[in-house]
Length: 441
Image (cartoon, rainbow, N blue to C red; front, side, top):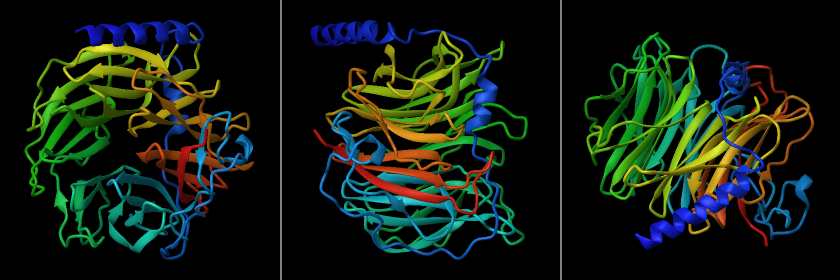
């Protein structure tokens, strides 16, 4: 009890210092236009067949190259080990990754396909960033939604199946991939997910998997959960809420599942909701409505006895800013603190617990030129932010769909780099990009 009191006191003192410069507030007037500015809707042109790159970066010694170079900047204290590079030689976007402890499992989606759904690919990369084997196609999709998990001996990719004459199924599918990187013959098809709007898929040792998704593209609302046992047998869907939900996320910690989503209120605002789930995906607790003013994606990670929710909130000013909400494993809200980042419009996109140093929060920010630039902010377990690390961006290019996976000393940063970014979607020059970051103090 004394430890919890001291931790809460320190968090409170920290929040007083940080919030003095960026106080909490509610509002939703600019939410719709800001969502549109960061929504990725594919717009593909022709492109070549998929290739592979054996080594996507040089394993350089950490040097002080300055913030503009995108490598380790000693003022920030964090940065890339070497130049990030493309996951493959062909146009692609929306990379998703999971860290196993020794390697990454990565999925991405082709760009530039003439007709029909776009191929979904998977490949393993070792801890040095070197590709293992060749990329394998695991399916096709008309969406940018995908999640990758690792069970301890195999991988799996969840995505929205792209309908074809030979495969008319519409909805979420799961493709299991063996430890050798080869996919299973059959897809696991989840019925009644044809109008999925957002999804999050996570696996935990000895607990199986949990898929949380929202419906809405067909006019239906609600958030749902599906549990998976160790043999990838899915349970029946459990409805978590009837409300319209725009973003969902789930994480495992302290023997249970914590899920968060943005729920639309009667007045049209979006409020952050958190709850815990049992092993079958059912509600363990009542829905906890944390705060209003939400916009953009939501992501969840677990570390040191707390769930951390990275989301974006409208403050006293109309410009949205990333925040971090800490919730005890039992469901009690500890507090919400701002995440350090650019002064411009910025949306949190992902969060990863990367060891005793705390969490890595990945975000996309609007630049003065009107494009988007990705970055990462390190946040301690008590919610204290370090200086943000901006990813290198050349004039005229744009970043999108950033994800992080790994440890503090070897954090994989996966994002889309588009040198000719259109107003909506991706160009035929977009590339799924991967770099490894570490501390440099």
